[in-house]
Amino acid sequence: MTGVTLTEVAPHTDCPWPGQDEGYRAYHNTEWGRPVRDDQRLFEKLVLEGFQSGLSWLTILRKRPAFREVFEGFDPEVVARFDTAKVEGLLTDARIIRHRGKIEAAIANARVVLDVIEEHGSFAGFVWGFAPDAHERPATMAEVPSSTPESTALAQALRKRGAKFVGPTTAYAFMEAMGLVNDHLVGCSIGDLISNDQPHLDEVAREGVDKDHEEKGGDLKAPD
View 1 (cartoon, one colour):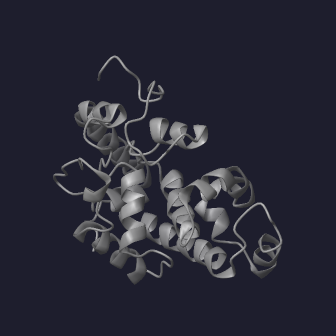
View 2: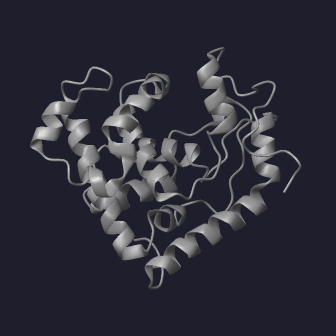
């Protein structure tokens, strides 16, 4: 582990996409691309990526506190029990994206996550099974792919189980944000920090997945 913690904010941002928006820069510096192995955080990101479809991530980021409130902290066990009355209530809440299909997809995806946890021991263990063995960081934004064979496989595996609003492009954005790939541009100080700590982070992720699985019992199965 280096002497810099992964919660520190770099003094500057080398990836161009956050622009000058302070909240977006903080997201880039403290969240985006950091390996995540917590099932609830992974579910949250999966849902929010679905809501982003056709919109900018900054729009979703600014509404995230409200999303977290109305979706009960993105606890999949709670969201999976949302009924018609709850959906109708969410459709009247102007603080979030009021799209029936996306709201119903969030509920369906919560049930998928619970099924995956039951089958594989953890959602993290399942998702991280699609991380590429090797990944070269892009030098320019033009080199960042919109999808990869791994994101296509992840999307197909989730959709096979009934997930909605999860295509290869959405799955790749999810993989970037949750640290399955490091797409901070070459030379970005945050990307360098993540790369330098990657062996430690991979070990932590594996230990976390193993610990989660041991607590649930059973052997982890390879994802379909």
